[in-house]
Length: 256
Image 1 (cartoon, one colour):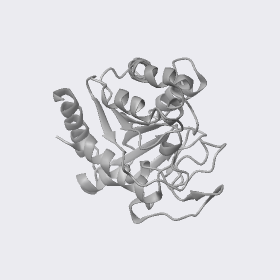
Image 2 (tube, helix red, strand yellow; image 1 turned 90 degrees about the vertical axis):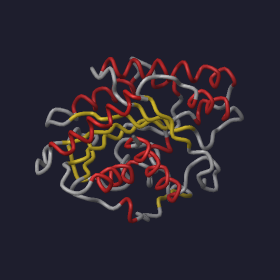
Image 3 (cartoon, helix red, strand yellow; image 1 turned 135 degrees about the horizontal axis):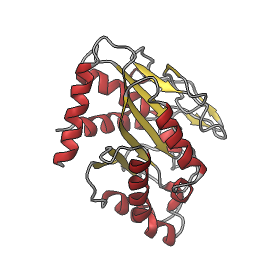
Image 4 (cartoon, helix red, strand yellow; image 1 turned 135 degrees about the vertical axis):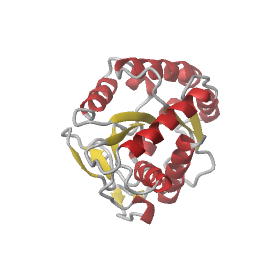
């Protein structure tokens, strides 16, 4: 816990140090599957276009595009990343806005790096896989204009609830993933924010949740999504739920 708090303290100090420097970015990687990519407001293959006040664009919040360039962030954050699915509101914009609101104006720019892809099991995120390599590539490329990666936000696991074998192996696979990403991003103490599932595709949701909440690693924190409202598909978070999750993630990251 001490080292996590220490990382957050360094983050806040970095924010203060970049006042007035719009090129400075406090970078957060968004990874996982559909609920991180955002399905808030998506129904019958269409997004309703509803953007809550907490998710409105701001010059202080940027997103890293599929073309590896920075632009002003706006929903849906993952529209050019999770291209085989219809994306809506996710937790990323709310998270960034709350980080800025909590720390005051003029603190510099928050940069979001979307990497989540719907329907992906954790086995598809293992070291050397296309998803893993793309995340590392995007993370490293996002640094070329300055800034620092402050944390990875991870919401994934619904696809691993179908079989007992996958659910039982989940915790070990996630621990390995965290270790591998820290090594390949050259950030051995990088904070990793894990969302404990609100839903799943199979009957082993609690097994995966227990694996997520049971991880005992330095600078790994778990935020529980259980109980947040779900869409009619009983799998994806509603827009309101995504807003609540983004706030919970921000408060957990900044908690001292």
